[in-house]
Length: 214
Image (cartoon, rainbow, N blue to C red; front, side):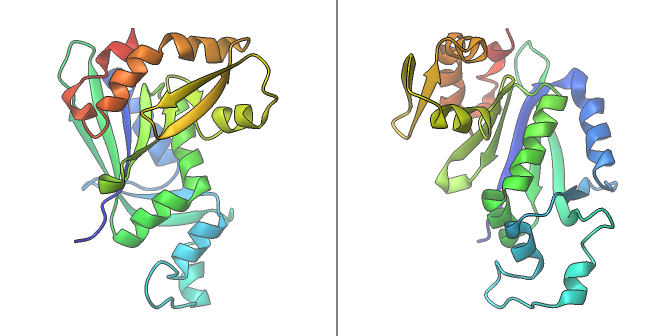
């Protein structure tokens, strides 16, 4: 059975139009929910375009060039978009961007450019939490209530270790936060709710994260 990795955003339904406006600015979307999104090129996207995730890459230059736009971005076809209303009183929806193939799923896991695109989308629509669902391999959180896990956390980890507070994410991820940073402090205040949300990942579909909007 193939892989069906997907980026999932939990967000307010009131921002639904803003989400689709952002999507359409970055590529066409057909009536079936299939989007051909344009991403900044990185080495993993190039590998995908040349068939490098398959057992027999084609290395066909003309085939690769079909998917490279005049601005240098790469078109990834097709990413299926679906929306599910979550239970609860906070008017939340779950928006899924699902890879069409196993090769595309592996691309989702590897590409820094694609993760950044979804981080930017999360900021645009004020996502509550955004993560990559890796099916049996768990989930990779990339964004939480204005907090960029692909950028802010990594930068903090490279910073000096003064005034540190270490938090263990379910025994799997250990992150160092700095209490003098107001944005980090706000995150720490939300941490108890965040743990509830972590337990609900893949799980989130039950609406267990609705208190994160408070």
